[in-house]
Length: 196
Image (cartoon, rainbow, N blue to C red; front, side, top):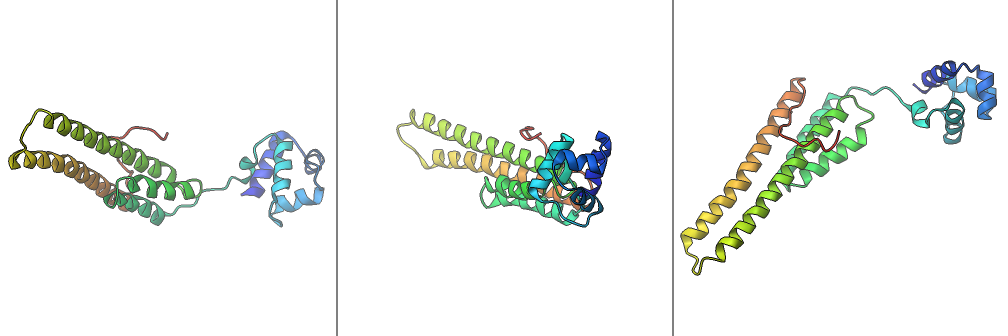
């Protein structure tokens, strides 16, 4: 891909191989070998050629993304890590996303959707728990004696909040794993678009 990129940008600028070699301060033979794919580009050479062509080195090194559905499936399955600890539902997909987002087609979009959903879910979970703790603290300030039925009520509310949120995340994640397995686009709702 580098060979195609260097030729494309060189001809776009109207440079001959000789002119590019002169402006980039590299040998003509280096330009010829890079364009024919006979040699791999080195850091300093790429930087000089990119400056001569008035583009970023990344534009020269950009390559076509490959397709790898097994990686995208693994990325989707990694979202189940929230079951071990809520923050893992963000961290593990984020690590998988960041390592391959520029290399595999579809990882950029799927990863962002998973991460946005998991961050939103974590915010709702921890906000719900915080509200629950404030409510319990406030309620107990008016109660002089705590009976078993009152503490059971608080536990039912607690497990309802946490259990309901975990169940929702589990269902949405399972649906999206199924969708990816059937080559359908992912659907994580609701989610804040924190990563665009």
